[in-house]
Amino acid sequence: MSHARPYPGTAPPAQPTVPPQRASGPWESGPQRGAGASPRHARAALPALTARLAYIVLCAAGLVILLRQYGPAARVFPVEAVTAFVLLAAALAIGAWALCRIRPVRPPSAGSAAAAVAWGVTAPVGLAMVANQALIGMWSKGAGLAFAADWAPALSAPLNEEVLKLAGVVLIAVAAPWAVRGPVDGFILGALVGLGFQMVENATYALNLVMQQGATDGLQSTLLSVVLRVGLTGLGTHWAMSAVAGTAVGILAAERWRPGRRRAAGAAVLVLVAVALHWFFDAPLLGGSVAGTLVKVAAGFCTAMVVYFAVRHGYRRRVRRALADAGEALDLHRSDALALARRSGRRKALLRVPLPDRPAAESRQRELLATAERRADAEE
Amino acid sequence: MAEPMTGGRDRPPWTTKARWLPLGVTLGMIALLALGLPLLNALLPDSEPVPADRSMRIASGGGHDATLTFDPGWALHPDSSQEGQNYLFSRNHVRLVLNTVTPHDGSPDSAADLWSGMRKIVRVSDPATRLGEPRPVASDSGATGLSGSARTDTEAGTAGVFPAPGRDFAVEMVVMSGPEATAADVEAAKRAVRSIRFTEHHGGAP
Image (cartoon, rainbow over all chains, first blue to last red):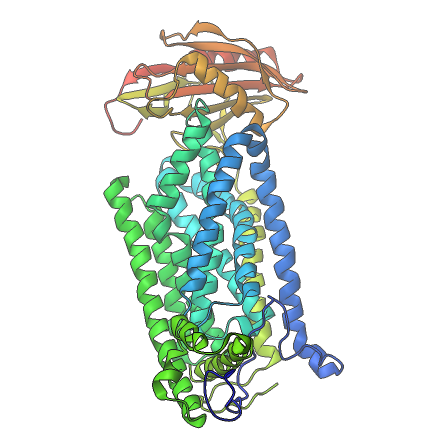
């Protein structure tokens, strides 16, 4: 028996031919790659290629709009802009790390996570500026400035921003089907999109506050804005709303975009819940007090957690079942097989393997997990 | 592209057509929001007349309202305005941009400090905007503040800042006009600026 194997026995279990494998890059590998010779495969790859192209064009468009809108303010207030950028980039890094960590069994691929964050910080931010400005303008013209001051944000941003953020998860799911294979992937990638959006929006709010406070002490305005937006409201806003909506994309992607009535309804409800949470946050309800704001933040956070634990529970259960079956086929003790579902369990298993054999053992662990996850996805 | 599965429930096979659907819906929604909404907004009139010779509340805070009074012929641009925060008014070729600023507790909030901040703020919308040296002014109602010249590459005008009596907020105004503006329009803008009045706040709609 080789020490390189964290499990005894012969070959790894036969891999079921189920949804495409995960790849490390956002657009890497996949069932179509390398098979593009035949016209049929070329046609099959066309939606993914179109999605990739749309992703790139829309990210670039969003970035250009963002720079046009806030570049002048950043040039006039460079210290404030750099301060906000550094603090929010750190918050983004920590948040993204935490969200990747909470994906059950394994983190998302670095490529898909990066693609989600990149979408969040560019396309929806810039495009939402255009859409919000137009819709709020229509409310102002049609219902008057007084009504618009109270209600236009709540009647504009939830629709525009939730749809534009969610679009990124859909594009990633079409461009790289192996990156979004079920609700868990949708939740995590949605949360990463929302987090990226949230941090750039926070930067724009910081510059807005500098000007709203008369630019008499810009640095203090910036710090105040960042602390409030990250520390007070950060836990329950965009990342949470997009995680809930992203779960819907995961459900639809798992059904190869042709869901039955029940799953389609479930996905629609999740998107509507995300929009409703956003509406509740922006609506002039609860008096705008700190306590009221905390209630709104708690609503977003708790809803995201309910969705997270629901999809996590089901996913872990399926992966553990698949690992138990694989372990049985390999004559591996059930508890050892189940331990592979957790990061700590995998680490402990590797520590029992002599150092020179660990890379090979780690590779075999990955294969076993990949097989178990594909089976879990197939049973979704 | 159908893929057999083992251990999973029956689900639809992968098809190219099924992947076009989410892509088409998504791109359609993006086009609707980012192109359709601005187009719809552009179809609506971009200005509305300002009631003449009637005070209009433009800011409030700390127990005070700030009001302006306009001559006939002024228009409000709702697209570029947010109640209580910022407004864009115009009268032919003259523009009056108004911003309410609320310095936070402990920050410098003298009129001179606010003028210094306004020098930067006006450069955000047009980097070529330069404010001259300010001098003390008083409005028709006796509100005190600072006023000075404003200039861009193509336009000239005046700027003013009027802190509210309790220093809870201040009203900043910039009037700009090109060479085609008439003396009557420029004078009407000066009268609008001089009409600023701070009154004790009694609540309710203006």
